[in-house]
Image 1 (tube, rainbow, N blue to C red):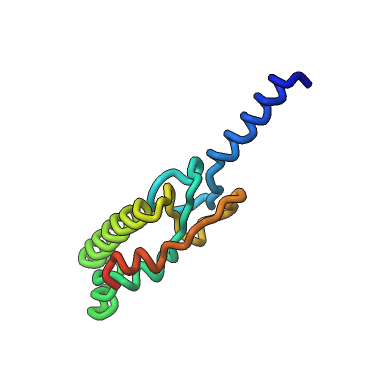
Image 2 (cartoon, rainbow, N blue to C red):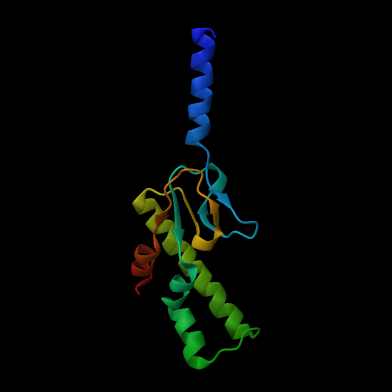
Length: 125
């Protein structure tokens, strides 16, 4: 193999590693970034984030039933707050993608950082 062709092959291989991303489940929820093109992925335990929100605590304390307008409103507000907190923490931690922990099918050799505690702190929990 000629040196120039060999070098080109090595560079193509290395560039594919840099932008390899992570593989997620079909029903994955990507809270921030692009899972298939990330190089600094992170995950969160979404249930723990929910439990840290005032909206979820209100749902539980007041017995708000699923399917009611109030429930839908609280869930919508909760999801928006979680997403905003995830984005802020991801930026601060240098992560370019955040998914729910259960949605990581294959990390493709990348280290997936757990941001659950940091996001809970950002949520005020």
